[in-house]
Image 1 (cartoon, one colour):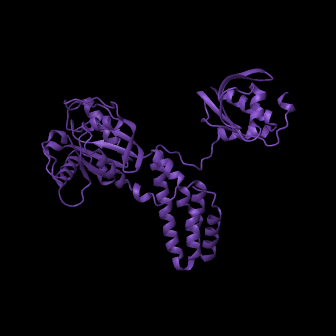
Image 2 (cartoon, rainbow, N blue to C red):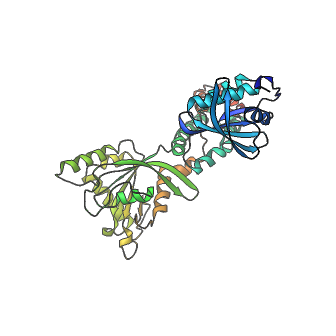
Image 3 (cartoon, rainbow, N blue to C red):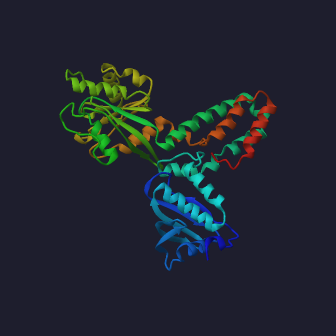
Length: 392
C-alpha cells in the first residue's frame, strides 16, 4: 500500500523538535491517531522501541533514520541534521498523512518559531515561565477593571509603567543578557574568581602583577537560594599606574569594557582590610584614583574582599548596610553570599512579582497607559482580560 492509498481520518501532528539550521542530528516528532500506520508504511513497524530504517520518496532514499517509539501513536525520527533532509522527511510524512498543509505548517514553525516565549538559560528561568499564568496580565487587568473608579487612571497607568519596566528586566534576567564586570588592582584575585565561577581556567593567574593583559567575557551562573541566573562576566586587566605600553592598552580596554554593564565588582585584597566599611571605602578610593569613579557612579557596584583564606580569622562586619562581601576565590568561601548580594542589587527577587511580557502584551499595556478616560481604560482592560491564553 502506498501513502496515497491510506485512509487516516485523524491526521497526526508533525513537529521538528531541534532548532532550525544545519546540525549533526535533527529530531522530528510524529504523534496522534494514525501515526502507527504511517510508520509501518514508511519503514515497516519496528519490532522494538528503537529501529534504524531507510525512508524513501519517489526520488529515492531520503535518509537512514533512527525511529524511536515513545508511546502508542507517538514516535520520534532522528535523522541527519541537514536542512534538506529535514524538509524532505517532513513533506514525506505529511504526504503519508494525506495533508500536505500539515508539512508546510510544521516547516513554517521550524523556520520561524514563536517569539512569544522568551529564551531562558537556567532551570529557574523555566520555572518562571511555568508559573507565568499566576502572574498573568489577564488577572491583573480583571482585578483593576473591577475597581476602576477606586484605583483611578493615574494609579493604574503608573502601575502599568512599572510592570513594563520590570518585564524588560525579567527578559534580561531570563536570557542571560545581564553583564557583570570585575575591576581592581593587580593580583587582587579577579581572574581566580572568574576561574572559580566557570569551573575551568578563564584567565592566566600568577602572583606577578600585570599577568592578565587583556579582558575576556564568558557566561557564568549566579546561584543563591532557589535562584540561578546566567550572566555575562567580563574579566579586566589589573588596573595600576604603569609605563608598560602593552599593559596600559589592556587597562584602557578594560575601562572601556565597563560601558553598559549592570554590576561592577571591585575586587580588593582582603589581607590589608579590617571591616566591610573599610573594604567599601578602600574600593571607592582605589576606583577614584584609577579613573573609574565615573563608571561606579553611573552603575550598581559592590566591593569584594578576596583572599580571606590567608587570614587567621574573618574580618569584622562593620556597621550599616554595605554593598560589600568577604570571599576566597581559591576555597569558594563567601561565593554564595556574593551571588545573593549581586542578585539583590540587580533587583531579581523584587522583579519576580511581575509577569514576563511578549510584544503583543506590551502593546496592550501601552493602550492602558494611553487611555484618556474611564471608557478607554475599561476597553483596554477588557481586551487584556479577555486574552487569558496569552501567558506572556
